[in-house]
Structures are given as C-alpha cells and as structure tokens.
Image (cartoon, rainbow, N blue to C red; front, side):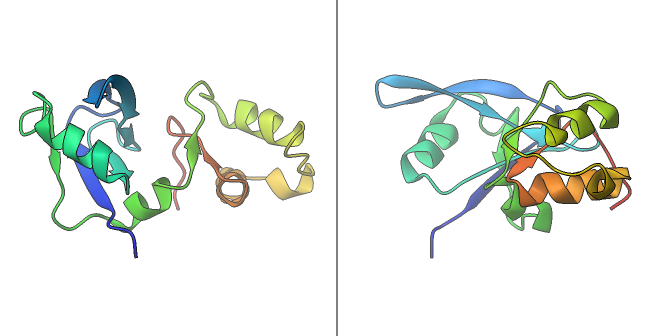
Length: 128
C-alpha cells in the first residue's frame, strides 16, 4: 500500500511551488470552505520536497489524521476555472464526458458524476 501523506493549509485554495530535485513542481491545496485547504500525495520525493520547503510548518503542515475527503482528492483532477454549477454541467455535457442532461439535474448529481469521471470542481460547494 502506498504511503499517502496529506498536508493542510489555513489559507484556503493555496497554490505554491516546491523544488523536487532540479525541477519546480506546483502543488495546489484545495479548499471547500475557503479556509482549510488540503493536498495529498503518494510521491515520496514530493513529500520530502514539501517537508523541506520554507513554507512547511508556517503556511502548511502535515496532517496527522486526514479527513476522508483528502484520500478521495488524490485521484481527482481539479478544474479550478469552473465557478458555477451551470458551467460544471456544461462541461460534463461536452466530450469527452458526454453526460446526459437527466444525470446532471442537481448540484449533488453534478458533483457525483464529476467524481465518477475523475474530476472535481474545488470552487463549488454542495450539501453532500
């Protein structure tokens, strides 16, 4: 089993760059409440880079007991430019997703279908 490490920030949807070897890697903390943002990874080199970054311990830190949503987020691709449920619905109706109108009749259904398709909309909130 891969070792998932989850990091938290209290800066909401935070985007930062960490140095992994000779390359810069952008990581994005995803927040549903615009306060607590989470980032999870199984990449050992990335984990070491995050934990040696100057922001570690002040801007973000390792979570000892991650919430259940963090493990789900590791496999979901965030779509940050979608800011309304209508835009999310339009995106899912188009290729490559091609989801029917009936399957997208509520925010909860849109969120569930997006999850099934491997994507998430971090700027949208539902009551799930």
